[in-house]
Length: 521
Image (cartoon, rainbow, N blue to C red; front, side, top):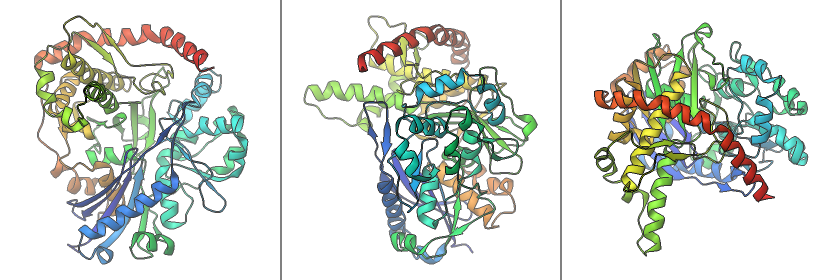
C-alpha cells in the first residue's frame, strides 16, 4: 500500500537514528539521539549497552510523533549499527560488561602478534579479512588473558546491531557479514572459528550465536520491546548487515559489472568494491582489508578501511576551538566548518602531506599497524590553519586511493556517502585523487536505507535486491563531481611519495609505541 512504512534503525558510534521510509524509498522522517562513549587510560573505549537500547527505543517513540498512525503503517523494522567491537550478554539477557567499541585498542598487541604468527595466513585465506585490535576475536582473547571472570559470565557475544535485535525480539543471533569476517569463511558464509584455537581461547566458541540471513528471516517485536517502543507486538523485525555494508547498499554499491566503488567518509573511512561472486574476490599480499557478505545471492563486498576518516577533520576543528576557548571565545565545530571548503580550495595543494592515522588504535587499511599515527610532512613557516586543513582533506583522498589500489584497479565511478560527502571540496579531491567521477546519494541516511532495503526484500515488496536498488538508489544519486585535470596530475605525483612516507615511517611508529608503553608503566 502507498502509505506503508519501513523503518531502518542505524546505531552509530555517536548517533542512534530511526528513519522512516516509504516502500518506494522516500525518506519520510528521522528521529535521532546523540550517543556517547568512554575512553579509558588503558586504550579501552566503552559504551553503555543499557543506554544504547534505551536511546534506540526512544528514537522509535520519537518517530511515532512525526509519522501519523505509524503503529498501523509499519510493515517491518530493520536494524544495523556500528561494526566490530564486543557486546556481551549474560544468561539472564543483561550486559555482561560494557560494550567494547571498534575504537578500543586493548587487544592491539594480541592482534599484532597473531598477524606475525604461522596461523595468520590460513585465517586470512578463510575470512579474506585482516586481523586488527577492533575485532571481537582478539578482544575475546584479551578477556581470556586479563578478565576471565567477564568471559565466564557471558552467555553470548554480539555486535551492536545484534544487541538491539536481541532487545527487540529476544533472539540471540548474528548476521553473515560480521560473523564471517571475524570468525568464518567467506566462501561458505558459515562459522570457521579456528582463530580462537590459535589465540588460546577455544572456550569462547560457545559464545558465537546462530547466523541468520536478514533478507530471508524475520522475528516479531517482543511484548517487552513493544512496551518500550510503543509499536505493535509482532511487528516483523529484520537483522541488517553491519552498517558499512548497509551504507554501501543504500549508497549505490550494487553493480553487477564491478565498475563502481563506494566510499564512506564518516567517523571511520570505508572504501568498497563489489565482488559479484566468490571467484571475483581479490586478496592482497599484505593480508589486509575486509571481505564481507553482501545482501544479494553470491555477492561479497571487499573493503579497505581507514580507522579514522572525518575524525581527522573533527580533530583539526577542535584544535581551533581550543585556541579560541583559551581566549574566552566559544565556537562549535559547525561554526568552524562553515566556509571551510572555499578557504582550503584557495590554498595551493600538494605542498604538505598528511597521513590520517589519528586513531589511537593505529591503522588497518591498506596495512595493519597498531602503532601507526597521524603526521604532517613538509611543514613550512607561513603555512596556516587552512593549509593544514587542506592537507587533511588531501590526506583522506590519498588514503582512499591507497585503499582502492590494494583491491585491484581504481573504480571507474565512485559513490561517496557519510558526513564528509556533504563537502564540495572533499568530493572534488576524492574525484581527482581517484581520477573518477564522484556521485553522492542525496539522502543522508544511507545506512538506515540499506537496512530498510533488506526488509523490503524480506517482505517480498521487491522480488530481488537488484529491483529494490533500482527504485531506492538510482533516483537518489546526485550530480557528478568530475575530476579536475590539474589536481589529478598533482595526486598522481604525490601518491607515490605519500605511500613511501608511510612505509618508511613504520619502524619509527614502532619505536614511539614502545616509548609510550614505557611512559604508561
